[in-house]
Image (cartoon, rainbow, N blue to C red):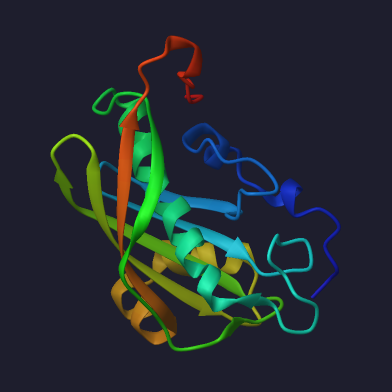
Length: 183
């Protein structure tokens, strides 16, 4: 795999339109899909990744933040559609985060998928998330497989982590703090 010099150059502009995150905290590289209840994105594990440790990769415990950003794509979409007011989202925690591996290996492509399960009142949202890892593939090859394959089979064959996340959505009451996401 060629050495990458700038992961930010691999960041899909669709992510910037839906997420408030920016480098170095934007961990996702490629937008795949989003609707009112689900989202999917890709991330590349390379030396430019924020949590990368040489010769080991990225610790699997960071998967919860990758999943949280993928869940945030849903809120960004809902805001663009006018079904959710501007807010600040906080990952409150996880009822369960399970990973079958300790590290996301260098050069791997991570496929993140999230589904919004429930919204409690106006402030809490619950998500079910899956992280699948692909070795010896590129962002584009995994994106193509995602678009063409049975995603249930694709995920079950490569799934390495799952989580149930809870996000608190704090409404923005100060107009100066309201961030308008690009359309």
